[in-house]
Length: 181
Length: 181
Image 1: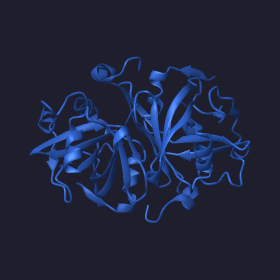
Image 2: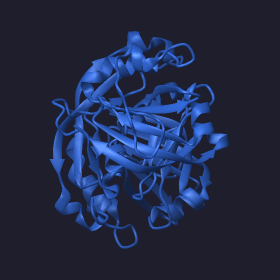
Image 3: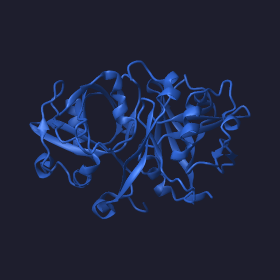
């Protein structure tokens, strides 16, 4: 069950550095890629992802200027690995990996019903020489009822780590937290 | 005991999205800040961090064009929170938090002896309107003998998550791994 998340909290979905899935819809086709080169840029919420023409989805980002960032849970690891090792040029990845595209409100790119969270984004700028795509989150939804709430972190060498022990330092960090977080 | 890490593997220190400490040395003063807005940009190894003039360290990054990215272990959480909630304008943070500055080889900024890993970096570019600082890693060291090898991930709301369960998908990811990783 996906519930809306207030804009002030959207950056908290990406700040911990999870592996994400990025969906696009272009020329009547949904596509999805796995990416872990992402960065929070602001509390507004503004994000960067690093990609380039070697990814089939890059054309869709350039042409449609929108996407959805979906955050998979740890039990989706083999789906994430599968998505990251095949290409939208010859594969309908939603069908192949049994993912359910759900309708977004502000963009044509689909939400991924199975994920922990989805962020509808517009492409604000592509910083060309670096392949940095600047995104603004327009709306976000979280599914707090999924049994596995752990996010995944890619090491980059083919190994992955799931979220472990949690620590609450809200009190000590209070002076640094923006309104509404 | 810090051991060198080959250049091809340096990006694997930042790809999982850990909270990092960034050290600088400017006008005879060491300084250190906590940051979790970072992104791998390339396998070369090239990174981005997002910061700005509101951080005391930003001037040092601009003037000296170098820094060290140090990765704290989970048992250093309260040091990280402390570093993130005071300023180098009025505090010698190495002294206050009992951190040991160690000599780097390629930059003047100090390594942090207590950390899991240290990356000596030069500032390659500052993408001004966005506060994106592009860094190239020159050398890196890892301490595999620290008992707590877990990295920390900031959620951004004052809570933190440590690394948990690990998964090996090297075989399935093989086609996507660059040489030497």
